Image 1 (cartoon, rainbow, N blue to C red):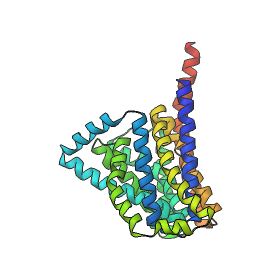
Image 2: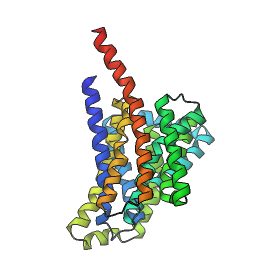
Image 3: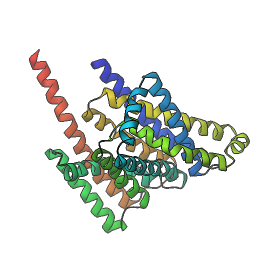
Image 4: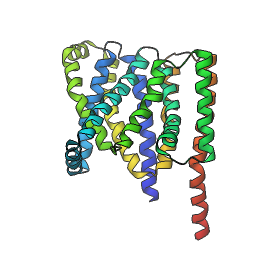
Length: 302
C-alpha cells in the first residue's frame, strides 16, 4: 500500500509539472494558432490514452460504457455537451499563454477547486467541515473583491474557474464521472481536431521552423498525452483527499509559468491571489487532518 501511494504521488506531481511545462512551451509556438495547438493536443491525448488503455486491457470496460451511453439518449446529450465544455477548457489553456492571459487562466485554476467544493455542498448536499466552510467563505470574499475592485473576472478566469465546476457537476449528476468518459469526450472532438490540422499548413510550418519551435510542438503533444496518463494513474492509486490536495500544485506551477512568460501581477490581482491562497491552505488543512488522525490511530494500534 505504501509503495502504491508513493508511486501515485510521483505520478500526480509529474503530471502537474508537465502541465506547467506545456504552458511554458506555448511561448515557442507563435508560428501556430492556438486552435492548431489545441487540435494537436487533442489528437495526442486520444492516441496516448488509447495506448494506456491497451496496456491496462481496459477495452472491454470501454465497450460496456459505450453500450450503456448509447442505450440512454440523455447520456448521449451529456457526452456531447461535456465534450464541447472540456474542449473549450483545453483550448483556453493554450490560448491564454499565447495571448498574454496566462495569469487569468492560472487564477481560474486557483478558483476552480473552491467552486467545485461549493457546488458539491449546494448542489449535491456534500458535507463540509469547518475548514472547507472557511475555504468557501474566503473564495466568496475573493469573488466580491474581484467584482468590486476590478469589475469582474476576466472571461478566461470565469471560463476555467466556473466552467470546469459546471462540467464536473453535469458529469456527476449523469453518473458519468469516469476517466474513460473523458477519453470518449476527446474522441468526439478528434475529428474536428484532425480537420483543423488538415486545413492549416501545420506540416509546412513545422518544416520551416528552427529547432526550438519544432521540438516544442512535438514535446507539447507528447507531454499532453503522458500527463493525462499519469493523472489517471494517480487517481487510481491515491485516496480522494490526497489526490485532491496534490492537484493544487498545478495552479501554482501555472502561476509561476505565467510570471516566467513575462506577465505582470497587478496590486488588485495580488490581493485576490492572497485571499484564494488562504482558502487553498484551509482546504489543505481539511485534507491533512484525516490523514494525521489515521496515522496516529495506526501507531496506537501497533
